[in-house]
Length: 97
Image (cartoon, rainbow, N blue to C red; front, side, top):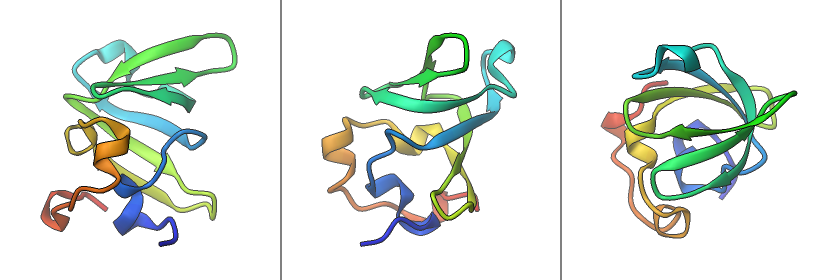
């Protein structure tokens, strides 16, 4: 399955560029970085100057796909261990494209 907006949550997210569109932490809004690691509840993001941990809950993220498309995803959809999320079925109604 190729990486596209509909299948984003079922793919590996490490290596993708991400921007924080909304967050419960106002200091993270507007942050742009690359995903370098992922746990059940967080992303580890690398900016030009530092590495930050970002909670998935209460966050709206915009991922840039390799083909240049931007996809907006609610972080709560991504809460799961990465290896389990890849095999689980996603509800399309919860996507914000």
